[in-house]
Amino acid sequence: MNQHATIESADNAAPPMAPAALREPRTLNLALQGGGAHGAFTWGVLDRLLEEPSLSFEGVVATSAGAMNAAVLAYGLAEGGRRGAQKALANFWRRVSHAAAFGPLQPSLLDRATGSRALEYSPAFVLFDMVTRLMSPYQFNPLNFNPLRKVLEQSIDLDAIRMARCPVKVNICATNVRTGKVKVFSNDELSIDAIMASACLPFLFQAVEIDGEAYWDGGYMGNPAIFPLIYSCETPDVLIVHINPIERPELPRTAMEILNRINEISFNSSLLREMRAIAFVTQLIESEAGSMLDLKRMHIHGISDDEAMKKLSVSSKLNADWGALIDLRDRGRERADEWLEASYDDIGKRSTVDIREKYL
Image (tube, rainbow, N blue to C red; front, top):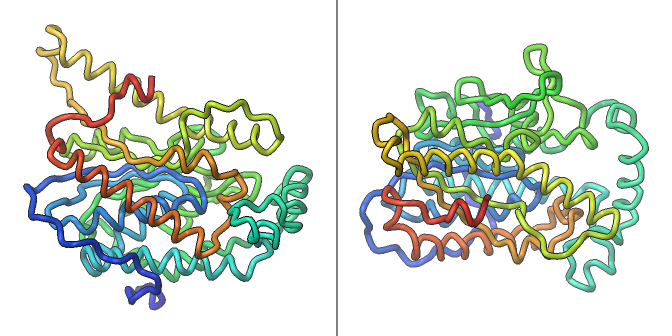
């Protein structure tokens, strides 16, 4: 038992919404993308979904920051139910912000004066960006220090996520450096190393070694992968919480903008491939030939705030200032509330995302 992983009241908790009218019971699977500090948006989405007494979760698949949200969610549900999960998530993100407050990557006075969440004018960020372009993490961080490891250790009890106790099926994605294949760590395999592997950006941190294999961020091969939910869960409904915009109308021109767009494209590519496969299977099911095949129809749903995310620079993913996290959380809650009002009754019946229009 991790003595630090306790569920306690968190400051600045989101104000509870008015109790929802009791609805028909519905079950969802969750697919949570990664995106650094932007993962606070997912925190907000989860916080709002947890307020729905008739909505339950069968499985969750996640990558990077999404993996941390997923592990904390599962721990909170196992230890304290819905309210416990809300408190666990709030405590986790408060610890993330507290750890970042003692680090060098702080918004500059100019950033703060303009209300920007970017770090482009931060001297520490400029130096940090230069160092990561010239040196590997094996050189500039030989001790492989990552403050998020301690935050995770203080925020979850892995015993509570074991299959026998955990009410949700957890699947955490990482990329095998040697084979280039996605590795999915499920409940009984889950460890702090597995979660850290899922969030290991190779330009910032040394590869995480587990059982003789080295792993990088899961976003390269699954951000997140959907297939674990198809194969291991009964419910056909998958709610994808998007952090990385799929489309951007403007052509990136600065080095930072180009790098950010490359990351978005590469981190969305595996999801797009799976959506194409799901669209093909759906089309086959609806055909005369498909009616004779035993194929599983999937219902795809999505929550995002692409307009807001497009305005955030890549450096803001490293900005864990509490005010910025709270703003993202509140945006997530608002988008989740809108989705629940518009789409709750569709769960279990149909997709609320036009897969061909959004992903193909």
